Image (cartoon, rainbow, N blue to C red; front, side, top):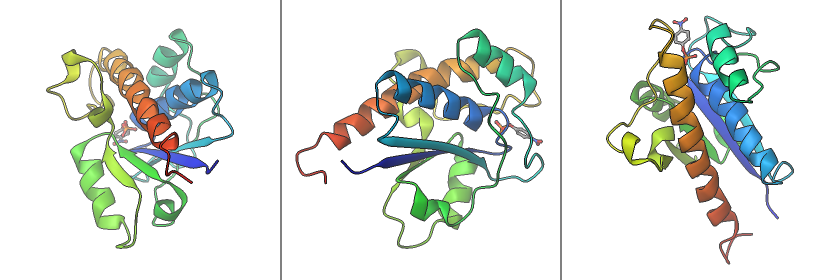
Length: 167
Ligand code: 4NP
């Protein structure tokens, strides 16, 4: 079976995309797909290169059973479009930055994470809000959105893997 790879992208790669990275990796592992689906995350901004995720994200994720401790911030780069089948942005600015960076022959899926949300409470929301400069309550909201949308994204990818013509 062909491997599938997923890259989550936000601005700093210390709050939203590493949260999605850890949650999605956990869902992949729970479904026994660790050897089929590769997961990574990156940022469009370079302020935190090599840094661990923000402590507020790490603590909220840990309380829900997701381990972000091994993750480190890195910059997204043009090679990522050849390495990853799914490039998943947290907000509209991330998405427009990625569209500018994507090579013309990119054949993968470039989308917003919340496009895969399944809960009606998020149906009118299209972006995972940047929690970095906000109050602490932004972090549980990010996790709630990420868990829902990552579940929907994994369901979608599994459907694609199981399509009869998939090689
Ligand atoms: P993230 O949040 O994009 O979800 O990682 C941010 C983290 C850091 C900064 C902005 C957003 N910053 O400006 O340093």
